[in-house]
Image (cartoon, rainbow, N blue to C red):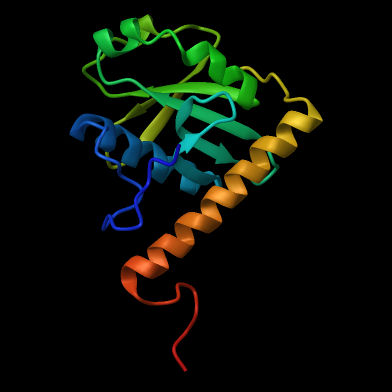
Length: 164
């Protein structure tokens, strides 16, 4: 099921995210961009789950970042272990008002303030099987291309093409 609308002014926001979650996401995206990761928010996965953020590093490593904005948000979500099936490293991202000790030690952790983020803890690596990696990369690539097309339609201009 597609969660993006070609009629929305911003196809990367589907209305389910709180303002706080969007702030956390923004800060983490800034850091990941500085780390040379290609980042996609809200990517549906083959399992039917949806990754808050999924990235591909310049070395081809796939990370998923699950955003949690409160203790309750973390406690009620029991689906996050399934994300390990779709990435080489799994992280959580949060903000300063959430106690960091609630997050599992076997996952990485980002702390975001909306203007940037810090990696508090590196995530352990659990390499994907080649067939799974190919499937995730194809999904990532197709979604990125489709979102670029939607952005062009929304602006009425071809992106990345200089005017002649």
